[in-house]
Image 1 (cartoon, one colour):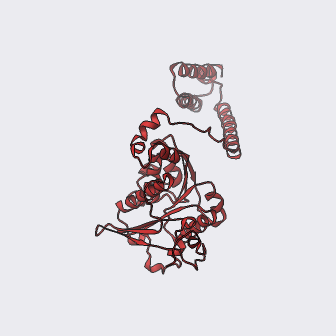
Image 2 (tube, rainbow, N blue to C red):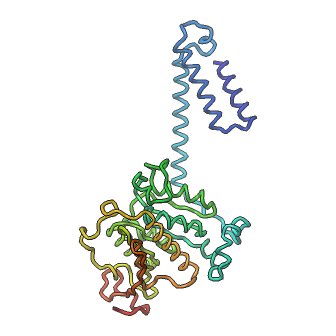
Image 3 (cartoon, rainbow, N blue to C red):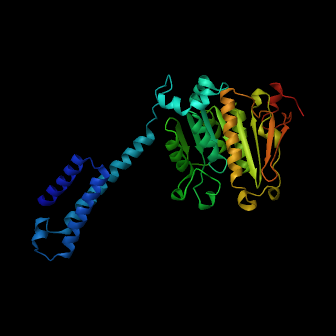
Length: 353
């Protein structure tokens, strides 16, 4: 046993001196222990090598099992502590670093954004509901634009069928929760932004509390139940909502903010259409670049709303048809009898239809 202990200490010390990663050193020790146990199992009783390394394989297996239990207990304890401990708020940053100034230079050069606008983006918190076809490009451009805190909630896993249009993911991430796969890519893309993944379905029970932590909500979901939940919580918390939808070759998008005189989403879509009239992307198909087009528009609307640049789609519904290369915009107005917002946009100056 002493011989094996000396060999382990030697491997660890040489690895430390050469700057080998901890994982590599553990790997080499694991190979050594595998060789020792194999020698005990193969060599006959009384063999000098067996005697020099402890005599019995059972002893080493017992030691390894005890070590594994201690390691597992420690790791589990650390995970529980990390989950239970409140996250420390990062210290506020007063100015941009040289790296950030270079990264955001093209934004800062725009007179409609400039330094103050880029600062507003860094202070902003945006929640994206859905990490699918619309969520992927929206998340990409929010992170690239320097939005300081980006949340993403979705309960789905990456699937091979997603890769034709959900551009944040790759084959190595198949089977992983979408929010964690997306967070990994976004952090690599821009380490200056905070990514908060929520690997769960958005429900009415958690929506209002979650929305309260954010300044702006983006809805890229593909079912009416979640869209209704998102809109109800956005109205209840007074959060502006950028919502978009896709079907085959066509996409639509608007900014809903009743507190500023616009309709809420339910003002425009008060009733669920027949399910046969709104087949899912899996049933009807969708053009691969279409989510990228509309998702990028969602990010653009978010940037304009957060910085005050230009004119948003508030009070207008944009419909983009890629098959015939047509884009049209229609006026949308608050509805006095809306069951969700009660026509709140009318009180803020919106005109009834």
